Length: 242
Image (cartoon, rainbow, N blue to C red; front, side, top):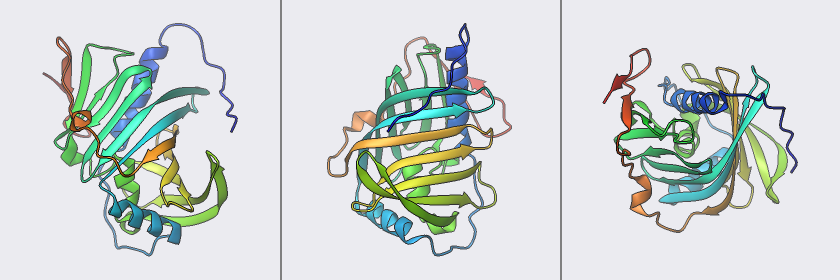
């Protein structure tokens, strides 16, 4: 599938902009949401949630595109993502190499050495009930968090997928989302998130593995020697240096 990339502005500042956009998106997923009365979600989403409940871990290659609509630019990246229930996540980038987002069950660590190898951002996982982990966010009790509407069938990576539009209920930190759910295996093949800042984040997954046990080291983050840790304590609270 071809993808149009809008022209990128030349000159200094691109790495810093990329890091700010990625960090803002990561933090947006950590905002708490009100849990309201459950509704019956779309059948395709029910099947995807059932399939998710049957597996212990999910790993896949990803390609990510962030559309910065206010600046008419796109930021592209790629890597491998692994999620292990209930609360472990590893998102390690190969492009740009070395960037990563790690949830170890206690903290979420965001490290982008492509922009600044001397700074790490950390926030409590307890303040991120599934929002950093989109598998958990969209597939764990989805009827309590979203109004879901099924769309048509679209192909992703040669696989037919049912498109499901999710409208977050009150308190969500983004405006809406779309999932492409494999009609045969019921796994997420693509996710698109419309954020409050008007950025649009799209991840396309391939080589999805539901049977292997991830290496535990994937979910361990070691602070690089000499790096400073920005401890983000929650919305509205100033960060603290460690």
